[in-house]
Structure formats: C-alpha cells, structure tokens
Length: 160
Image (cartoon, rainbow, N blue to C red):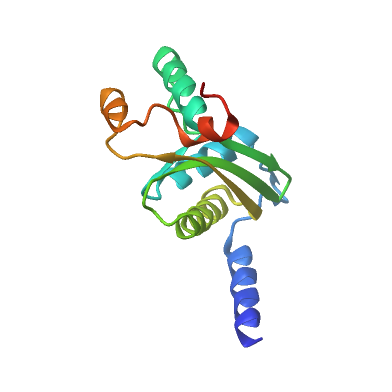
C-alpha cells in the first residue's frame, strides 16, 4: 500500500515538473509523427530489439535506401491527445533474450523518453513481438543453418 502511494506521489511530482503544453501565452501541439519517432528511437535503444516484423523490416529497408529515411517509425502506431498518448509497438527480439524482460525494458524506456522529451503523459505502451532475430545470421549463413524464413512468416503460413 505504501509503495503504491509513493509511486503515485512520484508521478504527480513528475507531472508538475513537466512544462505544460497549454499556457496562458499559447498552446503547443505535438503531432503523431513526433511521438512515433521518439517512441521508435527509444524502443531501439534497448539492446536486442528491432522495430517491425520480418517483412516490414525488409520492405522498410528498401524504402529507406530509396527515400533516405531512417525507419524510426516502422512498427510504431500512436494515438495522441492534448495531454496524453497511447503507443503500440511491433518489434522483433534477438533469439536468446528473455522476451518479458526485453518488453518491460522497452516499455519503461519509451514511457520515460516520451514523457520527458515530448511532455505528454503516456497512458499505455502495448507491445507485439512478431519475430525472433538470429544475430549474425542472414543470407547464405541463414540457408546453411536451415533458417530460410522468419518466425513470423512461419506462424502466418506464408512459407511454402
């Protein structure tokens, strides 16, 4: 009970310290794109995480090379209100990393970064793990190991 009160008190203090987006001198509006970029970068700061699924990463990599984009918003969907936001992330985790701990690290980092950098209160961060990455294995190396497709493609029945 005491721990819950302490957390609530800390959250109120953080909210009071955060500069308001609505003031008597004007309003600041944060676009979905800004929240998506900050959330995507924050998620990728956690070791062993890549945004998007197998197909999404492949197509996104090609598009990024053509358009010069960085792919920071791939696998990120947000709903932005006046003072709060909800974030959905779709990502892949390296094989051998404990998914519950990686998910919690991603969630905590995204909440901290968005609240501190953007000034919106994060109501929720929903995470979908849609692929497992095999570190250092791609192309011919994957074929030698018998890894010819992603785990997401296998589950979806896309591999013949």
